[in-house]
Length: 128
Image (cartoon, rainbow, N blue to C red):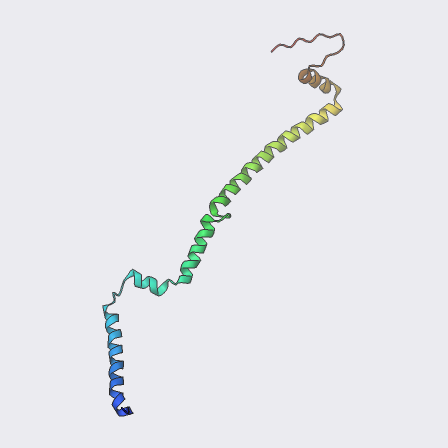
């Protein structure tokens, strides 16, 4: 049976520690100083890459993506323009309705021109 005491183990322990330290130093010295991969490993974490991927997905591939929002804004502008044109037409017809309700001569003119109405005993000739 072998008995190990502190005096026999201590030199082996220090030799082991020195070998570890020397191996680590030699690995550090052999590693390139300005490598892009080393920089990426040091400063870019998996969380950062995941957040960047989520941002790109939301910005370009989601239902609320930037391109889709631009399309929707274009459609809003088109509908606002159409609304303004329809409002102008509606105002024109409101004015015509007001004239027809107040002026009998205007009512007769519109009835004759648009609907081809005539007085009894009157002949109307349409020339195009």
